Length: 152
Image (tube, rainbow, N blue to C red; front, side):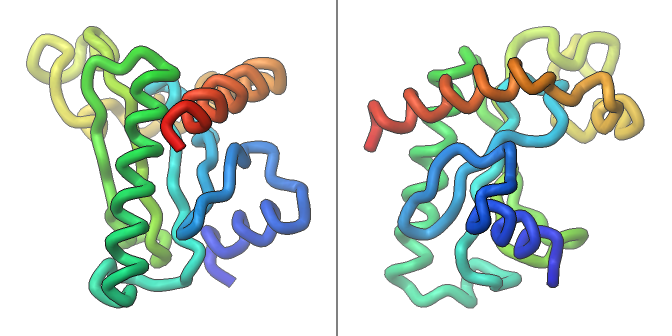
């Protein structure tokens, strides 16, 4: 079972603490690491590797819902700009990475703190220092859930 499918199975059995909301084509979750406050993911319900593998109606709905999740994350976490990633080289299951960005979140990295998230050192991004506490996670899930409800 792939990593994303495993996380989805945890949602289904009620053991994924990062789960926020189920939508028609996917699941909204808060990211495990929060250097970029409000970093969220949208996990496709179908195990597919590429967007073009989804039937047209599902693909359009998946893209629409991803956009709603991004807007909700921007609203909930005060983003000045959103960054979107759909890579799949590591975890070969369609899933969006949604990064709320604010001025200075890459301070000392790149062009005056402005640049893509991958300019931030991976060892710092994935440091346990960036894992939200249980209370922080609950607060983030509530904020994102409320923002989603306003848009849906």
